[in-house]
Amino acid sequence: MNLEAFILGCGGMMPLPNRHLTSVLLRREGELFLFDCGEGTQVSLRRLNLRWKNISVIFISHTHADHVTGIPGLLMLSSQVDREEPLYIVGPPRIAEYIETSRNVLDMYINYEIIVQEITSPGIVYKGDDFHVRCFPLRHTKPCYGYTLEEEMRPGEFHPQKARELNVPMGKLWGRLQKGETVQAADGREVRPEDVMGSPRQGRKFSFVTDTLAFPEISAHVTGSDLFICEGMFEKELAEDARGKKHMTAEEAACLAAASADVKKLALIHYSPRYTEHELKKILKEAQEIFPDTVLSRDRMVFPIDYVD
Image (cartoon, rainbow, N blue to C red):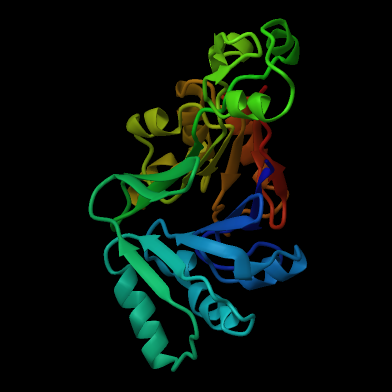
């Protein structure tokens, strides 16, 4: 099952010609999940040829303008593509007010159901058949949340030779064993899934954190992330300025990744507009000195998230 993250916008505060505002789309097979929706989100969706009609849920970190100004256009656009399924929007307090006010003031034509869920406490905010999305509080100038999408454990590898040795004929019985059912072999013996399958395998994990002070608890939430997308708004020389604005430096983001168990890759995002493309290399260098597997996210960059085994 494919899982990949698309950077729709990597900038913070204000859009630049080659840096739309923060927005990340996660595609899991045909289902799409959007994390924040800054200005320019639609442009990147179009250029990447992504079917926004298939967006199931929009997860909003907080209601500052550079994270939500792309929502009204996306809502209106979805009315032009014969959407039938409801669109869920999950976010902090007042996100429902923002959606409702935008609809009324802009006199939007909406021909599908919009279900807004305001977060009242940390925990699971969305659940699929074999995965869930969890939120956790961040520390910004207004209520703000980070998110993780985590898959459930996968069944272990099926060993056909073991099934043959236990006289289980190939066909439906093999399928039932792989689904976790006990079956009866040709000689009448019961064969359990663990008799023919390896140990359960880990699913994948994606984490999204932006607009926050750095604090140790973040590391616990993002532990095990195959891809950890985190703001790296400032260089370390501006650490005091970052703290005053309740943001973090790229170095602090790298420290969070390093302190977490088994984070595979850190992708920085939400850069201050003060930095040119060339100057961002300094931010990257500071982060890589702490956590080597760090990259600068760029608009329309794609990150495949593969199984480890």
